[in-house]
Amino acid sequence: MRAMVVDRTSPQNLRIAEVDDPVPGPHEVLARIAAASLNPGEIAHAQGSRTIGLRPAPDGTVLGADAAGTVVRAASDGSGPEAGTSVVTMGSSGGWAELRAVSTSMLGAVPAGADLGAVSTVPVAGLSALRGLRRIGELLGRRVLVTGASGGVGRYAVQLASLAGAEVVALSGNRDRHGASLRALGATDVVSRVEDVKGLVDGVLDQVGGRHLVEAFDKLSPHGTLVSVGHAAGEDETFPFGLMFGDDGRHDRSVVTFFLGAHSDFQDDLGWLARQVAAGRLDAGIVWREDWTQVDDAVAAMAERRLGGKAVIEICP
Image 1 (cartoon, rainbow, N blue to C red):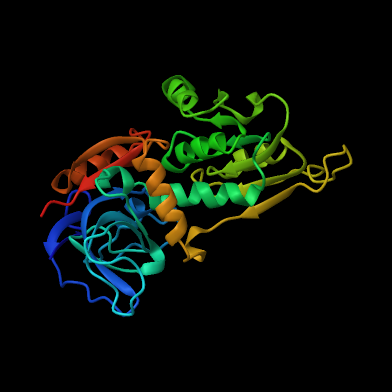
Image 2: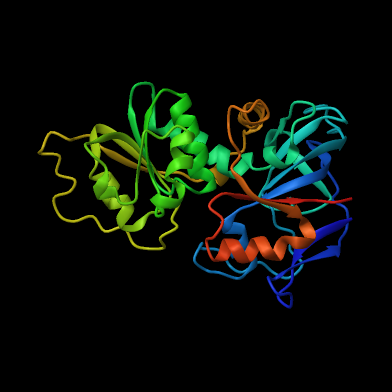
């Protein structure tokens, strides 16, 4: 089969090459991939960036967490969907290829006829937003701040929190560019700095880290929770003396860390998210979508932070 592999001699460290077909285990299906979405972390991994806390990926590695396609061989242990079922799949690697072997706990069934390119954006971004928001707790009637709101996770978080009945404040570094689209997704207010958030919030979904996390913590109401999902700033979090005293009545505030890779039971959530995208209740936010032979253009745009949404590659047979 063909796959997009890490190659340090290529312009963007990626090229399409022939590799061995994956061999599924008893609890895995074999899926033919139609589309995959790109995530900044895996692009940084391919390019050898150490800012995400990973060693550079070796040449020949097939990366790709997010991919959607069709089951061509059902799991031999009888779990999961039958052959012919459209699925969205999640994994630590292997998504940028024509074929993928994936555990039945790491995929979700997709409605027939759904746009697999749009659905491929769901795994990392949609699951991070969904499960991160759950850590905050009940959202109906509460006020939630989403930092990094114009990115893939942020856009899904704004929509999901709004659908759950929350008043959503979206923070984007480029409010002029993204303000209108974030309001269309359900944000009540859009700010470019944490200090511009009026009043307190009951929860924070933070993808930036650094000083943004510290400033956002200071916006929490009593019993509020900040969920740390991402660390785009690449900065230390330094809490000044007195910020956690709670003597101003804002006690029992908490900061919790979140790591999607610590979970593996995604079947129900992936299926639910795929259905929402297929039905048009969630906007995938695709801003770049091309044949995978054009991936260098997307990688360059992502490196320069020019996209402001999801990039999808079509895996052509």
